[in-house]
Length: 365
Image 1: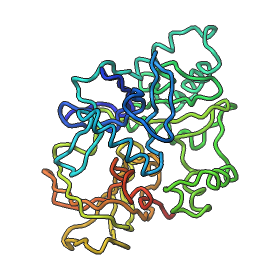
Image 2 (image 1 turned 180 degrees about the vertical axis):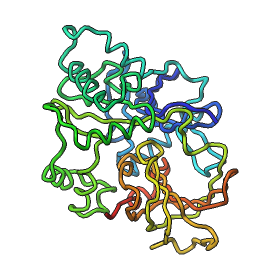
Image 3 (image 1 turned 30 degrees about the horizontal axis):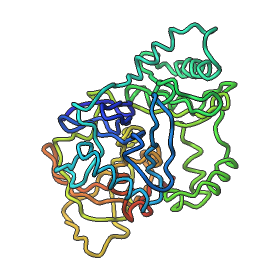
Image 4 (image 1 turned 90 degrees about the vertical axis):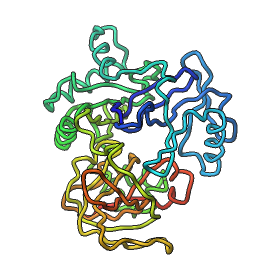
């Protein structure tokens, strides 16, 4: 097991750019999602090409149609087998970067400190907004030494007026401090989508996740989230990063046996890990509402946890609320506690299977 912060950009010696996708990783590897790959790796319908870093690259699109995505993954597996990790603990696979394949790690925390050294008179309109947003966030009591930047904000390949601002917050407590601050904080440049705007978004951006929500349910869930908004008309997104001592899903202390697809209901007893990736919710009084016919459940074990690798289901529920979730049921064998069940949403293989259309998590309050 090794710690490596999530949402960190990595360049590889084979020309890929990837983003770390967890905080704990198997020895010798970093769990990632590919962002850009050399153009000779992927071929097929719907690919988007970019000229970046002196190269013609292809954007790896996880939201492509399922059959097309299967073709992408098959090509990737054939040409870059070292970047696939079959986890014996999970019974599934992950995209990874082998550590010996790392060329550059882009440090978001150091990047922000370098940006803060640039005189204000020399900043363009985009970086001026970034600096103003960072200054605003520090009014929560979180200092700039616990903040960072990522994606185009860090690499400098942004387009003013188009590119998002991507901010990293280091430490779970710091993450909650800023998210709570944003519930009531005011700034002339700060704007959140209104209920009407969320209704319009729901109608115009139908996804597999939103299809499980009525318009009213979707708006109610989204209107209270504070990890994404507008600052000076530019979209900003906040990513919360666990510190090494804060990781909550131990890589080598648990093994997971796949049981099958279930829909469950339960009451949230702990949501403090719901703003990181993977994020999750501790639950009690869970009951199975639906399951695949072949599934056999051990009645002596309880479903006590829901885990999500998928961003739409982070920040989704709070302690005391009742959730309904559809995902992969796993039996967990732990070195530190009795066996239990958990439900997982957003494994990579879910994008390639029927779970893509079926997985969801909603809350009632």
